[in-house]
Image (cartoon, rainbow, N blue to C red; front, side):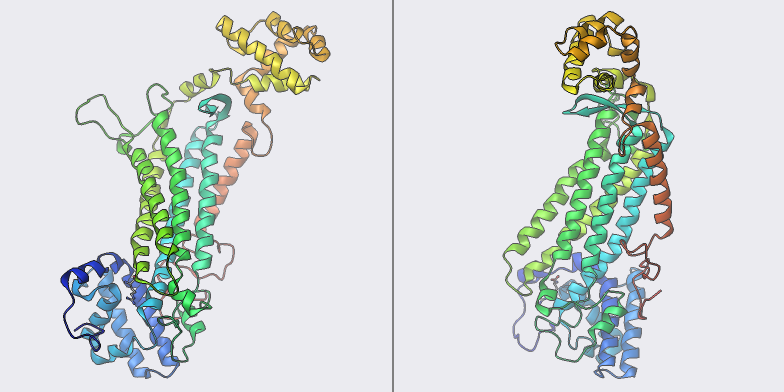
Length: 502
Ligand code: ARG
């Protein structure tokens, strides 16, 4: 018999039942649903709605169900629509009619909103660790190759030499912001909808503060209509996942190019590349390509959830059930992508000499030469023109800036109307000075500002990134964003019945 049997006479249409059913998807909420139910039972007992004996029987039954779910032993009945109805029915099978008291003052609307927040917390803790592992992989490669130089590009054209470590640390910055976004999303999700009922609030004096505490949540939600229909926390988490995927996708794109033999900057480990069924010569960056491809799907998850929400009047509407496929897909795809990209990056072999040779192409030290001329008293705009002439001259000779003779330097300065440039042209050592500035290492060293690619700056950035990663690992499993505070509960496991306070 259906749970709403009293009002309904006939059978459900098969097609309707199949269409509305969500157990295939929301079975993933089972552990969270059980934790929510245990917290609710305690609230019922506190309000005098169940006896101490009933509380004991209900909690013991729910704990047994949890063990069955953890063991993968609970069989889901598709005729029971969703995880909530399945668990309630399974509980009744095990402990009898007292199970009928569980749903007092509760609706699936506040129930599913609570479950999803608890699920999100577990997922965010795992994602935070996976983001940290990805940062670790990037920092590890940077530490292995602290002196490797890349041809830094803007507009995909040779721009200025940069350290490979600097380039990799740019992705560490992105991933740190991703961690911050997940922590932030979690902070707003950290409320308990339990006691909101279907729309208007439970019809019993439930201690909502206590059941929030029971679940390790910061407190109860403030408005029952909002609580049962709000999915902002779902959108925020998917948005954070979409942006993190975009970051991984950009890295994937770069690695695909770098591993092309024409670049030859890196070689993928056999374990993280694939061959061709037809072309024996191929070694393909398929995992990187799939990360790039799946980023499209996660962006779709975000667009889809926003579109799902935009036409919903208050309060709960069944459309909201569509939150879960998008959330589970987005966060699951990100977690898997982080795992494969961390492995792929950590196992890259880097060809430092190919990179350095490429970094010298395209007159990438031209800006450094212009800066050196400015340091000798010439206005930057004049120096830019002078070096422009030097670049043209180097191209005519098929030479690099660092190989131009003295007279080429003197000529380029002397050709300028600016008196400071003309004067510098007469300086006997000018050719040697500017050739020195045109070397790759001199160009790197000159970018000695906070956030610049000068080796001293990058070395310091690398040390502090490593220190931070190790320090954060020591607090892994805590709610993200709360690592600094020692009293925060740990979430390695879903919190059990007792208030979590240490
Ligand atoms: N499966 C539903 C969901 O995910 C649970 C809530 C159903 N509530 C209802 N009144 N039909 O949204």
